[in-house]
Image (cartoon, rainbow, N blue to C red; front, top):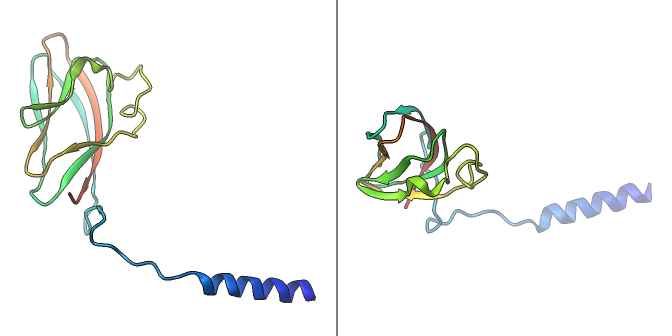
Length: 134
């Protein structure tokens, strides 16, 4: 009986010592009110460019996953190459942050996320990420 009393007092003291959580507007946060996650998949012909997403002015887009069957695809922000095609970061045979879904490639607000291939071959791709406040 003494054990149960001691346990009850200990638990009540632990609960009492926890403080409330407060939000901080200075901390980067995920877009509220909508599903912030997006994914894209398909194929892109050799020597082509494809716009995937226009980023709103008040948000950024963070690419977390990229998997391709070939190493011949750039990830770009407008015309700026953010991930070089021959880096093999997205190639399905490699174990990288991109193929494991752990990457954090930021595409700036007000820009367009697009992909571009070289003239070598058609590329099959899967890209995933989420919106966040800058």
